[in-house]
Image (cartoon, rainbow, N blue to C red; front, side, top):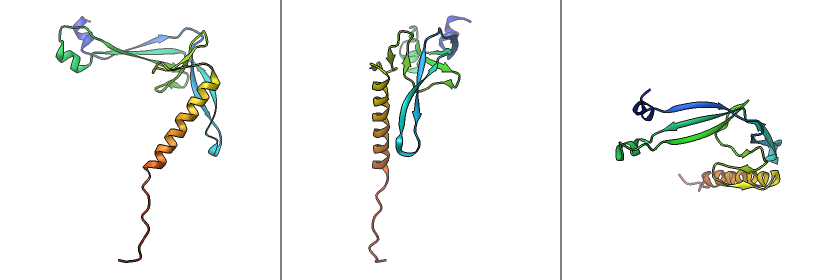
Length: 134
């Protein structure tokens, strides 16, 4: 494949993961409990996607600016929204947020869930009381 062909197409590559990498999974309780724990699922491979954004290609046709994204794959499939623990035990996210331990991660998940519930409540239309007149 010529270099030009590579840059004009999306490329997906699967790479086997080294041992010790894990993805956090939320453990949900029954009913109103919400998220009660964090479970760690082993990463078995990495999906690496590379592409050239169309706007970059138009603005600088002779440049080689390639975007890339790496996504962990577990036995449950690809994890689109993930927080990862490396072999040394460091917990981090794609947004570069680091967590000191499982308790800090669990607190983060609970805060995020509470914010989602609040946003959902705020988005519900408020019923207008009937006036009794037609």
